[in-house]
Image 1 (tube, rainbow, N blue to C red):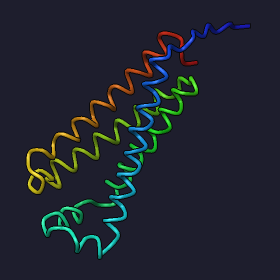
Image 2 (tube, one colour; image 1 turned 90 degrees about the horizontal axis):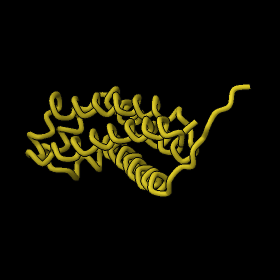
Image 3 (tube, rainbow, N blue to C red; image 1 turned 30 degrees about the vertical axis):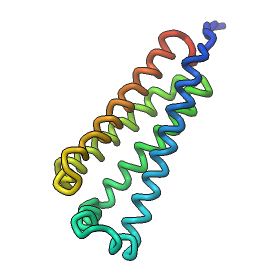
Image 4 (cartoon, one colour; image 1 turned 60 degrees about the horizontal axis):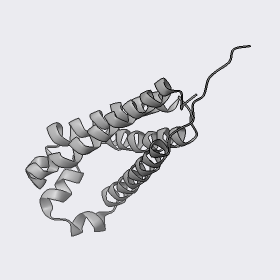
Length: 147
């Protein structure tokens, strides 16, 4: 019989996992809001013309990337809370989706033309959090918190 040593997860790790779960749930909210605006002629008409035009520059595959990034982010955080090492590959999938989505937003749709240079702040933050989640899962695996 193979014995797997499982170390006790520190409280700071669990608290951070909860905070990051809440972060990802806000991402789900952002996704839902984005889809609701994209699919509502009334909501689009209420936006400034440049912003409404920007919403039209997001093809279906960018919405799918957005959905995958936030759903897998939530699942990965749940994996951390359940002490499962499968959270790491789930976070990697989320991260790849984040990069695809943010690349399109910044370099293809050119969101900075509409929102200005401040439009780069949130994508950078989201990318950094995505990387941190991968590190956090890896750390948990190496320390034996996740099995």
